[in-house]
Image (tube, rainbow, N blue to C red; front, side, top):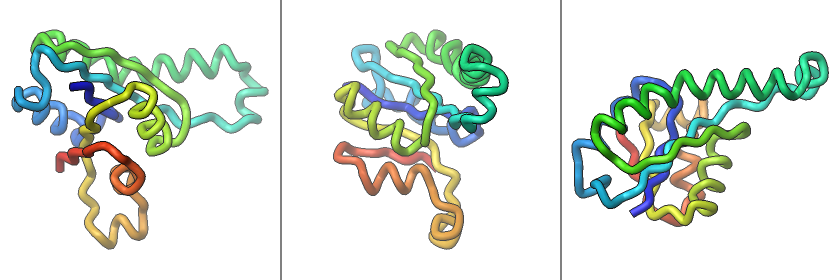
Length: 140
């Protein structure tokens, strides 16, 4: 099974990752985990001021801060994985990656704002669940 795992470095990401590796039926040695970190795009004026190369380096560094500890954790658990970082809107990038990768499932942590919080704040998890045509497992 191929699983998309969006990671933002939060405690919710860590909790979802721990859940995933402790449930071998979800992610065992024959499965593949695609860990995604989505960086928000910089305004065009910033890109013009500092240059595309500097922006790319910034995104790469920020993604590395999130992905490096996850890579160490997954290596210890001997799981098959790849990591990627993308720039864009999180929900859209997660959905696009799931299609591109031909994933069977998305597993992600959720902040658990509840109904009122979701209505006011919006939620990446809610948008992914609403628009996705494959199973989505939310870990709270």
